[in-house]
Amino acid sequence: MRYMATYDLMETVRNTNQWLGATAQAIGSYPWTGLMPTPFFRLLAAWGEVTERSFSRMVAKPDWGITSVLAEDGRDHLVAVEPVVMKAFGDLVHFKAIGRPERARKVMLVAPMSGHYATLLRSTVASLLPDCEVYVTDWHNARDIPVSAGKFDIEDYTLYLVEFMRHLGPDIHVIAVCQPAPLALAATAWLAEREPAAQPRTLTLIGGPIDPDAAPTEVTDFGRRVTMGQLEEMVIQQVGFKYAGAGRMVYPGLLQLASFMSMNADRHGEAFLNQILRVAKGEASDHDKHNRFYDEYLAVMDMTAEFYLSTVERIFKRREIARNAFTIRGEPVNIGAITDVAVKIVEGEKDDISAPGQCLAALDLLTGLPEEKKAHHLEPGAGHYGIFAGRSWRDNIRPLVLGFIDANGGPRGVRPEPGPRAQEASDAEARSRDAGAPA
Image (cartoon, rainbow, N blue to C red; front, side, top):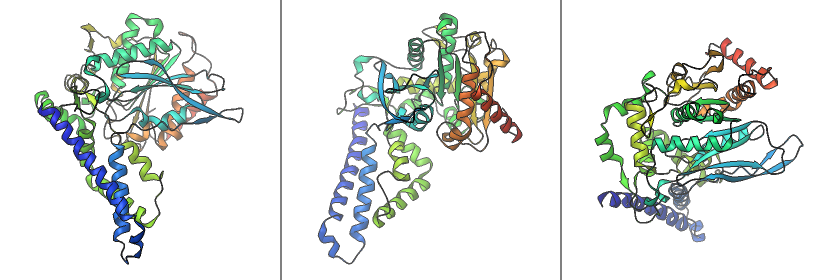
């Protein structure tokens, strides 16, 4: 019961701060405050507005906000987000451009389940939509899933990916971002051994911890210092009475957000102070840079306890993927069984979460894959976020990934002639090599 009480205490603190912010905004906005020769009330209203907005975003799932896409016919086509596979812990959704001819490239974007919603990949989706049919794994908030739905750990996550790939068919191109990279690799290996005809055409792994020990970071160091018993005691709680998942053991999003904020407390404090001053001066807007970032950053979701704990224990501590020792329901998953899926690795030179080398380790595990089907790109100067959603993604990595898809998108066993996209990728790879970055 103490875990449930702790969960509800966190929600009570959040709710109280949201109420205080709304109250301060209302008091500071009364017309009579304009008669007072002091900036106090304007600052009070600004503090209230920023505070209320921040704490209310913590329990709200952001909208995708992708309403249309421009096609070659010069028209803006409306975009509908349609679920194509619906499961208890997550859906596979399709961004369907209404009235636009179906694109030849069919991309399944595997979103992380690491405390934020799949909408974290909003800009990634928007950048791929003009050229691809885009499908995304849309994971659910564990607090909203009844206990009767059962458990959900990394084996279940991997089998979800297997089912999604199987549903979309063998012409799919999978792009896994950050946390799901090792599990997307495992899902592909599972299909390679058991249903080769259902394998994806290509697999692109972006900044994921295939081998956390290949390049230690603060994240991997934390995993070594803390025992599983300590971790479970410190961070696992029971969902409170307010939500449908009451009683489910979770790693709360609010707790993870607190740890995120504390890691860069000075920077976040300065950002919020500056935003309060901008609001007070009338220089802020509803969708300014601060609000666009923090509306997404503050929107957190709970993870099931078994998913979080099994990720730490099996991916980071035991290194089961790195050692090719991962099992699902007692059956071994042999990554070396992948022989016909082209695999590309993308890393950021300044990635401090999944440092360069962690994701690259996947290529050494692919012992059955010909070298010509392996590719690696290290983006100079890019951090973790930049390699899938920032300028580095838009300007350089996205063309490389699309070129890789085009170069390996033909019938299995047949290498197609390089088209314009492939040539674009080749030129970009050459520029990277000239700049000193491994291709």
